[in-house]
Amino acid sequence: MAGSLAAAEYFVAVDGNDANAGSLLAPFASLQRAQQAVAAGDTVFVRGGAYAMTEDQIARKRGLWAYVVALEKSGNADEPINYWAYRDEQPVFDFSNVKPARQRVTAFFVTGSWLHLRGLTVTGVQVTITGHTQSICFDNQGSNNIYERLTMRDGQAIGFWLGQGSDNLVLNCDAFRNHDFTSENKRGGNVDGFGFHAPAGSTGNVFRGCRAWFNSDDGFDFISAGAAVTLENCWAFYNGFTPAFGNLGDGHGFKAGGYGIAPDARVPETIPRHVLRGCVAVRNKAAGFYANHHHGGNDWLNNTAYLNGTNFNLLGRTAAGDVPGFGHRMKNNLGYKGRTEVSNLDAAAGDVSGNYFTLPVRVEDKDFASLDAAELIQPRRANGELPEIRFLHLAPGSELIDRGMDVGLPFAGKAPDLGAFEFGTAKK
Image (cartoon, rainbow, N blue to C red; front, side, top):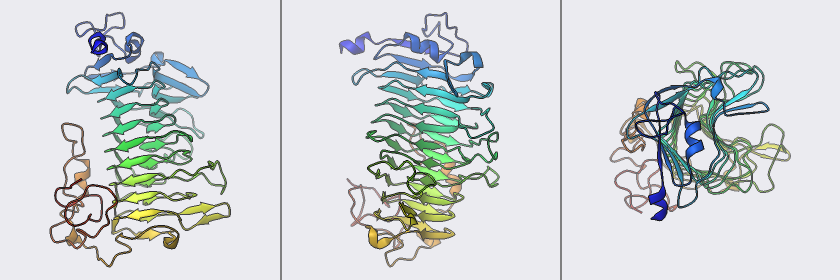
């Protein structure tokens, strides 16, 4: 109670001034100035409007990197530092004019821990290097942080990059229409919606309720990760395409693992086992769910793939080279109308019972309440959760209902259904 009574509130507004006191009536102009003022337990409220970021606001330059907003201060378990959109207002940070020569741009560089960012939008992040490079909207290097209801759109940068830290939660965030048309072959082959690339020892990281679409490379990418990550109820669709469905980068929905091109490239001592449950992959250019030459297995539980190049590609790798994927635990997964349904899977070297491709079931249009993929882009609910849709939900009478296996997730009826959406009210 004493800590909460001592907590301060600061405000940032488009018409603010960094010489102000940071109050509601005399707000700061920048988040960087607000960060100088905060202490553990404080909250920074960001008023709505368009924040036109400029190069003179770059907080730090280090080697190739230009960090525009650097959040370095930490809260603690009982007193996090909050950076929240004010009420229902929509602050939009536009980085279109931040173009430091020969440097990679990171819009928000977060090295602090016990922080909570909520309701911020980043757009227009630029690329200035023509060789191999990457810019990033949000780069997490801390631990115990929450990133909630963030939007990363219409730029040349990766949306969210988790490169270090443990026990971070990325919750109900959207990354879309991001395409690097400057570097390398201009196809944007390094621009993902969400990236997880943390080293060994980075535990407890979770992406939940996030969407990635029309990103020029992949929706979610875990290549070269030394630690495991969990994805829950995330959607990846239309990745690898322009909004007009022109071809761009790789175009995987969920690229869950792998370690580069060489068979032994940067392989950690312990191969991480990623968990994807309740996720949806729709019309991604390549695979919906892709193991990406992984050197071990992942857990794939109650996921749905529709209209992808390959719905489930479990490609594995050993020191000798590429092999059919091994060690995977696959339960209650559902796919439909992929150009290829399942490829590169060594079913005997894993636990893959209880899926649409192992059960005596036939998947048809009539099994679904809706096949209108446009529902995926509907606005989120008021609390930031994914929209309520009918798309790919099972229709009454479908033989896919109650055909799954109990894997510890909520379900209704006699047994879990196949796919990401449980028919009826799920029980614990």
